[in-house]
Image (cartoon, rainbow, N blue to C red; front, side, top):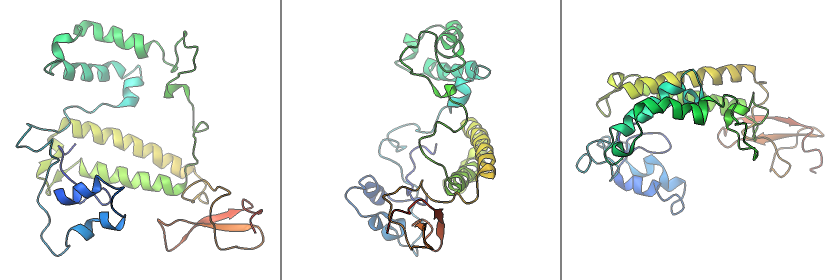
Length: 251
């Protein structure tokens, strides 16, 4: 969204090209060596805005998003055609592609063939079980248990992004309120946050471990006869929850 501006992965602060180069090689450097305050002195002035080499204003007009697409809205027959037209309009204005485009009158027909005529996420001729996400209902098909900590962290990140892209950013001198893609992004993220908050409100408050407990975990300390507590290193000053009768076979 920011057009290739370099930021620290961990705390989103503006950073330097030298620090960015390290972040691109996490297999080379330790976690500590990648931290922002190890690479930039906090007492120095904030680093100036720097860009990824392929997005530097000196070599390209702009790397900012020209359009933002919602996958959910694209797959919803009520909003999908309009979302599909956003994709088509961008391609229709892109050199090297626009001359190969089908006519705009056919866009809706193509959308219906691929998505609109299959509202349940599967086609009649689908014999291989390759369904899309619309074939799922609820959270029963999830591969991982989502805890209240996961949900809280996701809500915090969405709130950060909604706040950022819904206002003027003095760090970069970008007024996001004047950007149509940013306004659309804020609308999408606000809807996601509402859904996450509803799930958080419905989740058992004791479901607070960082990940689903597994028998091969190292857990400590022993608490009563058949109880263990799982330590979450993201929250070093507190336990992530009491796990009852899940490690009774561990001495």
